[in-house]
Picture 1 (cartoon, helix red, strand yellow):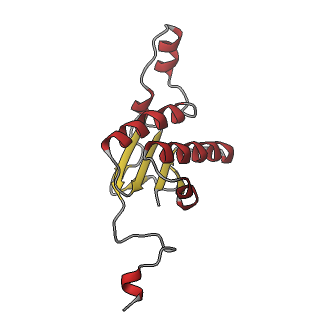
Picture 2 (picture 1 turned 90 degrees about the horizontal axis):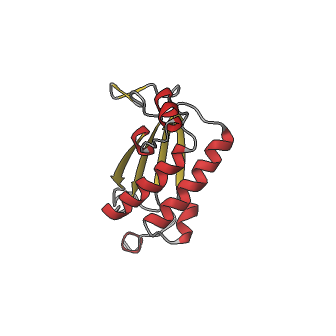
Picture 3 (picture 1 turned 45 degrees about the vertical axis):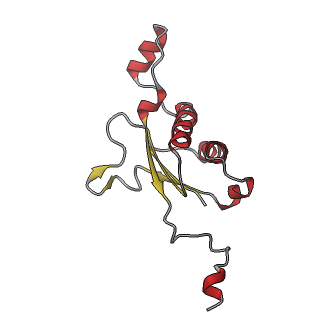
Length: 141
């Protein structure tokens, strides 16, 4: 049951829908999850105005447009790498270009889009389980 939390400086409802759908598809594919996990996945959007600072640190420092927290059971390094690559290109569609990026694009130079996205992966605690799955050991007691 993956949890995805997207921090941004502001997105429209339509942009959030598109991003959520793409992130769900990317999560299922890159972490090789069964299709039924789609209905158990949570995507939450937090705008910078809702949480300007977290633990004394800026949520979106400097030129970072998005921060994505990914919490799931047993994330593999190859899955994280594949997820980062695909998700970075998704976010690049919605990140406003900086002046420097506009200049470099006009010159034909393409920069990496993942520099403006922070990814944070966490292991979902085994104590947190799907509430719809019955623990047979506990129910027998």
